[in-house]
Image (tube, rainbow, N blue to C red; front, side):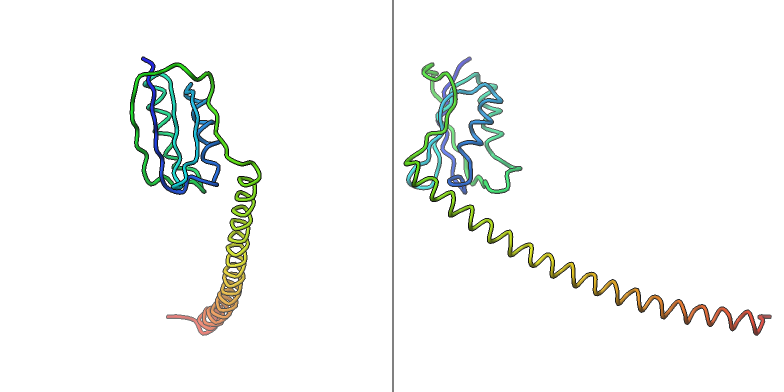
Length: 158
């Protein structure tokens, strides 16, 4: 049975590719409609399709494997299908404004990635240094052990 879901999604859902993600999920489940950003930072999705496809669509919208998207809440209002959609599309605002925000956000993510990479390299250098120290210590202990074993063999036991 065809239904219409109006879905309100809150969390980190703007300027992270959520509307495009919603389109991919919609296409996967045979759902038609649109996704749009709201001024309060949430996203509204109006979706029509078979109940089973809509249920799977809502489940996949939780974006559990998406690194930038974080869903805090997803509320659904059901109504009768109006049959007004023949595809799913993200609705965008002013193109220049959206591109500016995405560029700024991309730059912020890039900076964070560089910071993390620097920390990771420092930790790797510290680990390599610690491993070198362990290797030196191990070599010293092995040499001592070899001298003890040699002494035992030359003195004879028993």
